[in-house]
Amino acid sequence: MTWDALITLGTMVFIPGLMPTLLSKEAYVPRATSAVTLVGLTTIIIGLIGSGLVLSPIVSSLTLLMWVFILVFRGKRNRLE
Image 1 (tube, rainbow, N blue to C red):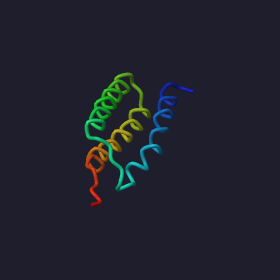
Image 2: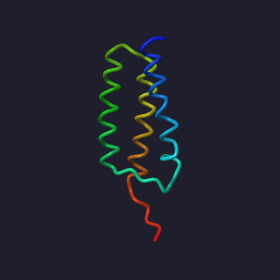
Image 3: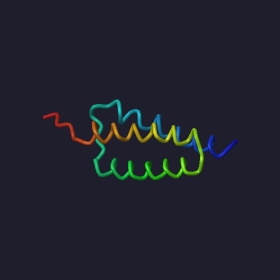
Image 4: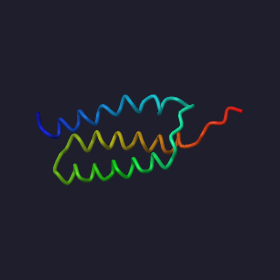
């Protein structure tokens, strides 16, 4: 197994874990938490691309996109009052 495949599989683990947050309108993640995660993922993706890897930056970018949606749509508390 190549490093690219191993990192890709490891990153794919995050996708099912983020789905409930994306799909639940009641979910809330503070925007600061999402923003820090975005900075970290962007740094990792740049490093993966710089290392010449192909699959892992693509999957990591999908995870980054999911966090962008969490930042935009789940960064506000829903008031059910």
